[in-house]
Length: 119
Image 1: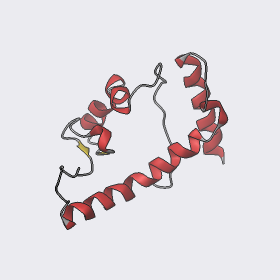
Image 2: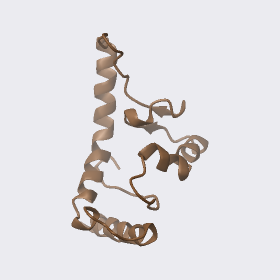
Image 3: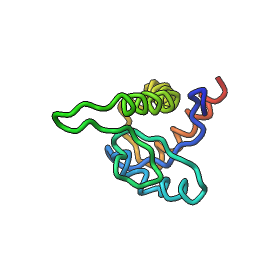
């Protein structure tokens, strides 16, 4: 939400799965597109589809225009609450070195999310 509280978590995936791979695995981009929910994402999602809005990446040996810089700042400001919410969730020690199955980690993450929402 705009206050930085996470409202939903996708099921955990094994290993260190890239964000875009996880979004594709869980069909998050496709679902948001069908529901008309716009997505503001970081540069890891660049080229993932027309429904995603990402920052403009500087080309080698070129500078961004003032308009591009302003757009990137606005996108960063829009993403900041989500990044804070993720950072707050990751502050729980259980997520630092977990050694359990994705199913169990999904249950743990949902429990932690519930506790965070009660704060």
